[in-house]
Length: 388
Ligand SMILES: *Cc1c(COP(=O)(O)O)cnc(C)c1O
Image 1: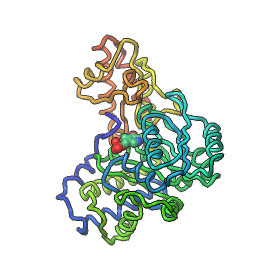
Image 2 (image 1 turned 30 degrees about the horizontal axis):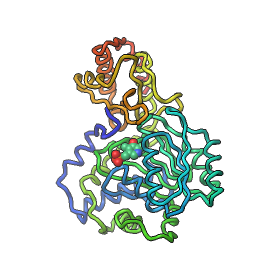
Image 3 (image 1 turned 180 degrees about the horizontal axis):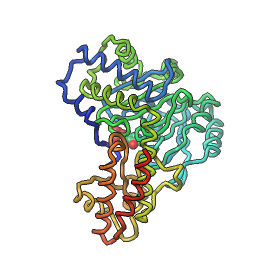
Image 4 (image 1 turned 180 degrees about the vertical axis):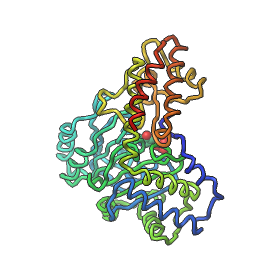
């Protein structure tokens, strides 16, 4: 129950059981092409957007966006909601961008007006190239609303990049309607696969910005121009080669995205929302306080919860004694004062695993001298889980 790598479905596991295909095997060509088209559906991207699948993780997906879209001296605005926003700001600086960060107190997100002011302030030094935001920051459990951010960027001709690593397929994001330019994720989070894939969809505007680049090209492995012809080929069921794709993971990706599309992306997001509400109700009856300040700011995909007074991270070992793995803190300023529970991907279809998590946490709290009414917490969650 950590915020990635997550539990995987039996269907995804079965796909991984196949003997590893070659990159020119008919089954791989079909799965790769199918997965790329399915990404368009899950991302809700238009026909001229371009999906990319590269072996790696979320950090690579972030780097793929930053390295292609920033040239030295470009101006960038980062909506900073925690650890992973710090990371993309650092990447932008390393690519030579002049970075303007908009922050909010831990547990909150900057207001759109503050973002507008930052865009205006940054623009006084020259045209702003890029706006970056973390859809769900995994270090705080805070979700930003992408709609006003994407709109502010579009109005000003600024490219918008959203880190969806802890969000994609668990939070609503209609890439086409938002007119967002990059929405990126990794396989081991809300998409519901093992770790190993960087997944990204770029708008036609973003692809064009890379084409018109005047600075030297990005490192070859990061260069969209190297990858996009291969992706276009596979989507048309024509295999190509730039660097060997992780073929077993691509079989798993095709199976996992099929499960999401078969459920329906809106229903899948609603499943995550309902589970998050149910678990928050459980935490609340246990007297536990979340890091995000409001329900609106609280992610569907994970809970970030303060330790009660007198309780520390030894709680997690007591929960582990019951067979449930939770995660410690990540945000450097509050790391030892809170813990995290991931609830994304396959587990949202398994009320038994969610109930077991509540039971294990209740027992663990009792062990560390903070007894709670676990039965009441389960009842609070079940009342919402039963509403499926
Ligand atoms: C996990 C995560 C990342 C980093 O992904 P890795 O696969 O660990 O490199 C980036 N952004 C967010 C929001 C994440 O949750």
